[in-house]
Image (cartoon, helix red, strand yellow):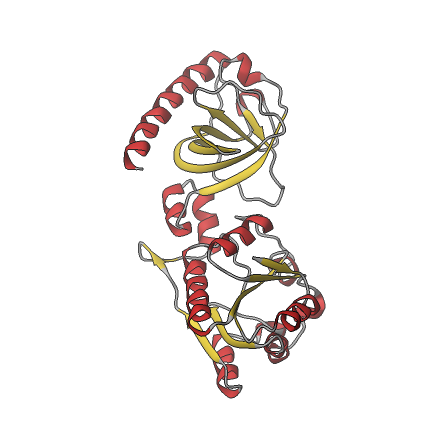
Length: 315
C-alpha cells in the first residue's frame, strides 16, 4: 500500500499511473474497529467491482487535537493504523496534517479537493462530519455526490452486543477493565507494541523477570492490573503476564507496562515486543511486602497458565 502526505503528491502519482478513478473514505480511524472495518470492506468491494483505486484519507494527528484542544489517548500508532488499512486491501492512504487552514475549509471545498483526484465514489461512516464548523455531514456527502454524478454511500452503525461500536466507547471499556467487550468491538485483541528497555531488575530478583515496554505518551493503556497476554518477538509467539500500572508496592509514580513471558530466559533488551491483551486477571494493588507480592505472582502465573491451556485448545 502506498502512502502520501499531501494532495500534490497523490495528484502526481495519479497522473503518472493513469489511474482511472478512485473510491475513497475519510476519517480518523483510530482503532480500525468493527465499524471502520465495515467501511473498508465496502470501499474494497466497490474498488474491485469497478476497477477503481481504493484510497483512505486520514490524518497524522487526531482531529480533536485542533478542533477541541484535546488529544484522546490513541488506540493505534500511525504505522499500526496504516498496517490495518493495508491488511484490509486498500491500495493507498493519504495522511494529511490537520491544519487550521484545512479545518476552516468549507465542506464543499474539501469535497472538491477530493473529487479533483479523480474520485468516483465516496463511502463514509454514519457519524462522519467535516468542513468548517462541522457543517458537512452524511446528508451533505450524499447530496454532493448526487449533484456531481458520483456514487455516495453511508455505512450504518455497527453494533456489538447491542451497543454501537466507536473508538470512544472502546477507550472507555479498556480503561474500565472490560477487555473482552473492547476486544469484541475491535474484532481482535487490544495490542501494544514497544521496545524493551532496561529496568531496575526487581522482577528478576523476585524470581519473575520482566521486560519493560517503552510506549508513546499518547497511547491509551488499559485499566491498571494484571493481564494474560500473547507476545510476538521477531517470528516467535509466546504467552505470559503483563502488569500495567504504577507498581504501588514499590512507590513508582509513572505508568509502566511489564511483561513476564512463561518459560523464557533470554535477554531481549532493545527488541520490539508486540503484546496482545487476552484476559484481564485482576486489578493492581499494593502489597505489604515483596514476599506477599511474590505469593500473588505465583497465583497469577498459575491462573495465566490455565488460561493458556484453554486458549490453545480453542485455537
